Image 1 (cartoon, rainbow, N blue to C red):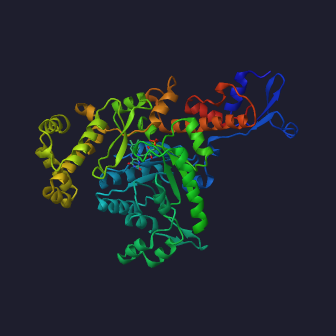
Image 2 (spheres, helix red, strand yellow; image 1 turned 30 degrees about the vertical axis):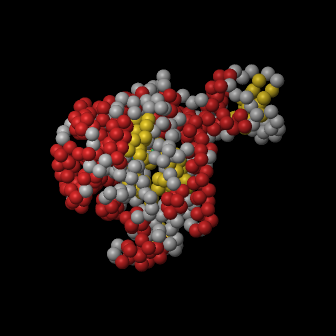
Image 3 (cartoon, rainbow, N blue to C red; image 1 turned 120 degrees about the vertical axis):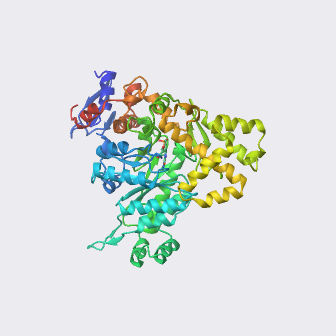
Length: 524
Ligand SMILES: Cc1cc2nc3c(=O)[nH]c(=O)nc-3n(C[C@H](O)[C@H](O)[C@H](O)COP(=O)(O)O)c2cc1C
């Protein structure tokens, strides 16, 4: 008779189809054959499901991927060249965290990744900057000049001129008359009205502006009417960093329905794809995303605690100890004035509390000098480590160094704006202190992080993945994908009426070498 362990092993042997036959003395495991498949009563067929089986084949083909797995961008190079390289070399794709970096830093990363990866997949982030639209256009020009053909567009509230320029530049028909679009955008969106714009052709008004500025040709604009702004779109649920805290279970079906409507409305010649990011950190959540129809999964928070991430060891350690409730929403540096928020780690840092205080002061007072004296003193002594006036001088210098005289002039005429810029400077630096591991500033570390981190730590507890020093991004990705296969197989068996022992649908972390063996095995 089959033992419970045999049954668990049968579910976990993901490369091998199994026929589970329920008889009076328990469940028997067979290889399926023509004869034993004849009668299906009291038996369950569990097909082979490998990590390569998961996700949308068109999405994988489009981007040259073996696995439908994306490592999302993390600003300031936290999604480092090392992270992007390991994803590309292991059949997945990663996006370099270009947000917050200078053009020369981004350019250096482009050279490094092109040299290291050749034609293997990699991408760069284009993050919308309300405060600095010129930087957005300059970044797009850099990508076009260097032949970066895949970007992840995030934080957009509407389609912008630089975005259309990137998407449309170089569009042409090949010798068979098929439209070829050299530049691909994977949009990351949490709002339906923004998603709708990405799944539509580029707006005519912006195409016209680009023609008027002689940035695209009339022919490029004509062909643009037949393509979507983004062929692929990540529905971003409750995540680390900028987030609307949308629940994945509600968000993904809405975006999939939108995709189907857009395909019916526009008759694009290639299918649109919707992936899911936000909260994915375990085999169960990866399985849920694919089972609900996600074309691919995207992770962020869990990669920040990995060896390849560009952030200091102390932060990685803090992250590796975080639990689900150790995150909080805090005001964001880039869209501070409009009250935008980011999800951050609250364990081991006072940042969320301090940032909230600054935001409330900005909302309630017209200038810094109006704050109660005790609050002024606390901010100067504990947050800024200098006087408000001295902090303004260094903030001013920063804006001038980026050629942004306009912001400086505005602040010098408007004390509320001056206060906002100084507070934003504290918020902006707090993420740099975390990256660098500035020992004097541990209480000010701003670490973007979502509840996915706690879920991952809980799953990894007691395994070789518990210490952050053992966490390698591609190995973790393969664990999530392989685990998702196990969870899916167990669900198949249960859906056919078999009662499985408790461990059957659980997958514990495994070293990559063992996973690769499991994937290629054909044994029963
Ligand atoms: C530290 C950190 C920094 C991030 N920075 C960016 C960024 O610059 N651009 C971007 O598009 N997304 C950014 N994100 C979002 C991730 O790319 C990804 O969409 C998100 O983390 C997925 O949700 P999860 O955190 O629940 O895995 C960041 C996330 C984290 C954790």
